[in-house]
Amino acid sequence: MNRRLWILFGVIFVAVFVVYLLPAIPQNEAYHHFADTRMFLGMPNCLNVLSNAPFLLVGLPGMWLVLSRRAKRGLFVDPQERWAWFAFFLGVSLTAFGSSWYHLNPNDTTLVWDRLPMAVGFMSLLAAVVSERLNVKAGLYLLLPLIAIGAGSVLYWSRTQSLGHGDLRPYAITQFGSLLALILLIALFRPRYTRTLDLGIALAFYAIAKIFEAADKFVFSLRHIVSGHTIKHLFAALSTYWILRMLRLRTPLDALQQNGVW
Image (cartoon, rainbow, N blue to C red; front, side, top):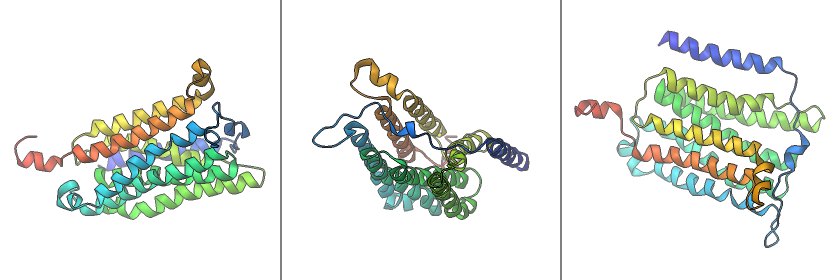
């Protein structure tokens, strides 16, 4: 356990150190110029706005699930695990509103409201997996500090951007550093539940979402039907749905062992 913890902390430290060796990363204003700006029923950037609805369709059932009677009867080995998952699905739900608001009028100011709930989601998911793979109390104690760090990274970028020397490095660590930590936690530590593969599939869907985000203009140029950014929203929402699906279907490993199944 100690050796694996050292590997986890060591890799994260090196990654953060390398990022901060880079010069400050300002927000490129070209980021706000999406390929599909078509208007429908008076709504600008219509598909990029409407494609956020699936986040709400996942987030609300997710919050309901982790606070339901089923959660108290055995969805979690320790009922305290549910708070990190609740924060995750709350972040997913708020992303539907924040991202929609941003895409109605893409600029640095509205982008803050897009990134804040995503930062909450990333860090809450990390706390949830820490609870399951390392220690429930550690995940619970880390939940609020991690959320504060994630939100702070967005506010730091916004402040530095407004002063003319924007720096995205802390937000990059929040997003991609949390994903790196998740992968390490999955690889290094024993699961408490079945269906670990589902978490890997969810991360793969998110990776596909980022690829479509980068290919926004290319995808739209193919048929001018849908843009890469719209598809990005759908794959990102699918990633969160797969996590919800995992929670619904998984079983504690200790229960399987007691029943002689594992």
